[in-house]
Image 1 (cartoon, rainbow, N blue to C red):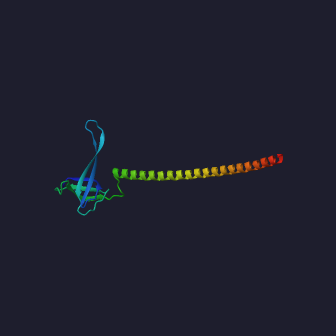
Image 2: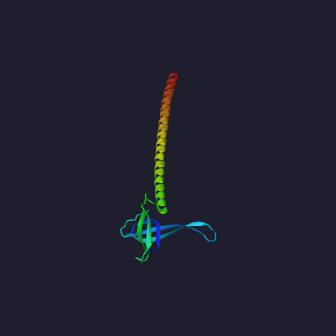
Image 3: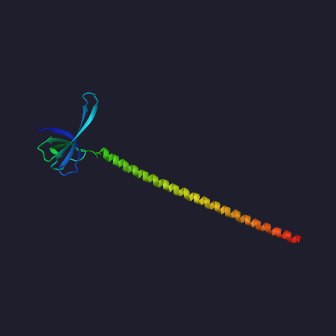
Length: 156
């Protein structure tokens, strides 16, 4: 039987072609540290039956293109949900963050408008009070002037 590999489909966007990622754990020969190695293979999928996240078995065949030298043997397990790659997760996070920032800016702007309206109302109230005080003082001055005129009229 031909050389076979089992991996996870990471892309099925091209017609009759899938990209399969094979993950393996290896140990460094000198440092004995384990690390993950991911290899990607392009495989031919005649019926377009494999989708992102599916576990598949691929086998080596004659080269079908510059990069495609494997063919899909079978789908071992269908995907149970969407598999998000790190780039997609980061993009979604950034979009969410930008949306949250926009909401926060809008909220702060609304609070600033509300505070400005309250400050304007306070200024108007103070102006009205000052106007009443000034009007009251003018009335008192008129009354005093009348009394002074009466007193001066009596003296004359």
